[in-house]
Amino acid sequence: MRSELVDLINFSKSLYGNSDFIPLHEPCFTGDENRLVNECLDSTFVSSVGKFVGQLEKELADFTGVKHVVVTSSGTSALHISLLLAGVESNTEVITQSLSFVATCNAITYCGAEPIFVDVDRKTLGLSADSLSEFLHKYAKIEVGHCINKLTKKTISACVPMHTFGHPCEIDQIKEICNKWSIPLVEDAAESLGSQYKEQYTGTFGLLSAISFNGNKIITAGGGGAILTNDTKLAKRAKHLTTTAKTTHKWELKHDEVGYNYRMPNLNAALLCAQLSQLQFYVDNKRDTASKYSNFCKTNNIELIEEPNNARSNYWLNTLLLDNYDEQQEFLEYANSHGLMSRPAWTLLNELPMFSGCFSMPQITAKFLSKRLVNIPSSVRL
Ligand SMILES: *Cc1c(COP(=O)(O)O)cnc(C)c1O
Image 1 (cartoon, rainbow, N blue to C red):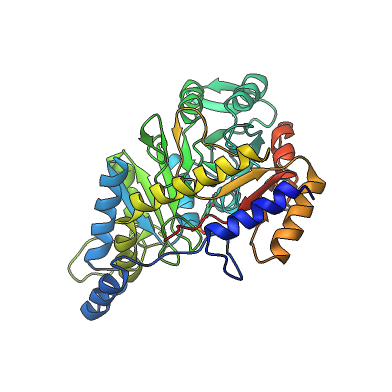
Image 2 (image 1 turned 60 degrees about the vertical axis):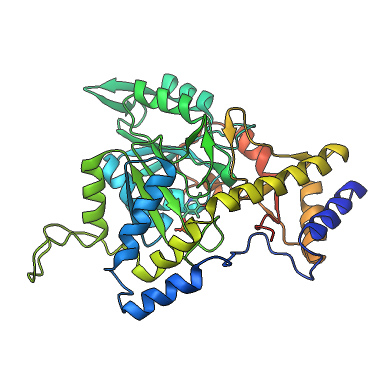
């Protein structure tokens, strides 16, 4: 392996205090977490009702500038409900990217729909506006206000771009294309809370968007998620569907449709209220770490993924683009056996057995990236 890469591994270790094992991303609970969780325990309202759920929803809306937030049990459940509310039904198709976590496609499948994979962009690592446009011009038509796939005759019921590792994708171009083709836009913003595109937070561009609070994300409650939308009616429906579709009544236990138990417990919301008040600090801290990595990489001829044009990334995970597959494998082997956790990007979703039969545009950039990307330690540094 190139000596510069060994130096980078040592540099990363030095950033994290040279401890024996440096994880990729560990949570940080140095704020008000204990106090708020204890307050929640003392109140005994640990479950589906309690003040922290509403407080968190309001604070997340204030932070991101979106009108409505509905918190959920996970990012996956937030995506599932977002897709249902965008109109994703069984026997329809949803356009997405192969370079993503499996939850993106799982949620599409829960709706009975099938993913279509367009390629990703070399700079943003997110869904490529050019590939999306090429797919639609080749294979789609608009029929009575719906976008139809000419090959399968199925409706294209949504498009789900993902902001990979926190870097905003070309979301304004993608939104314009989706509008032109009458395709509802649902953002998978699971990794990008706190990232901005043209000074607007990711997760606020789509008809609906999903955020994750899983243990490895920028803020966490162990697990959890949120649905973001500017549409008041959809927000009401999201709340209803994620809370078992129970009708409001003083004592009657009545449900008016098949809903989901996807609510976030008040206990987790308490923890997240404490986390959210530190989000801006975390973003600044992670951006500082990214600039340290960036300076090191520039002087050592290593390519680090930088935030795209017009974007301000939360730098959730710092990512190297290595020269080739062999170098990627050597790096992973060396780093992981020397106490520095490093991981490649996910196996492309169109290569997983359950999605390998789905339609794919040529995955040229996705394949190129998946053979070369590695994530390196990116936790908040104290
Ligand atoms: C983490 C993540 C999710 C879902 O998160 P969970 O909260 O673990 O269900 C969805 N999509 C992407 C891209 C993610 O990284």
